[in-house]
Image 1: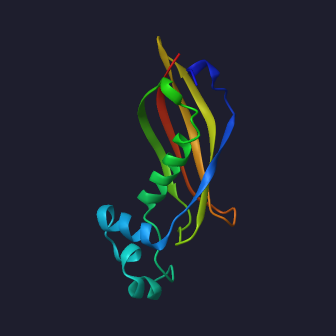
Image 2: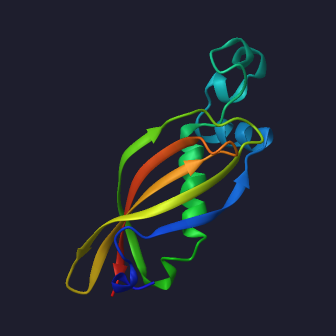
Image 3: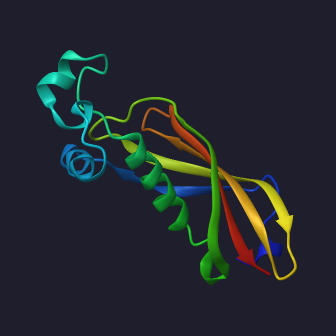
Length: 140
């Protein structure tokens, strides 16, 4: 979509994705090697009572689902910022995640504009697990 096609308050709904225990462990092994993501025995004895996904993985999956809506299309130039990132609830193996992306700000520039969306990620129980503001430069 071109910058002018975005409207304040519009909500985009994404497809969903299920995080397997294997994908959680694989991601954490590479990018967030902490026990609550890798060590089943230690994680089971901890406050989450089992392995949970890295917040960074939850954020990356949320971004992936948003991008896959195709809303940016070929008009996106680059991301400009991520703000107010919140990891609200843990994400467990086999949780199904989906995202609602609400357009919360539009700033016009000379040849483009900055589109800011609030990504809100929900699990299969419709509990919000993640939120964050994402801004991107989009051509007119």
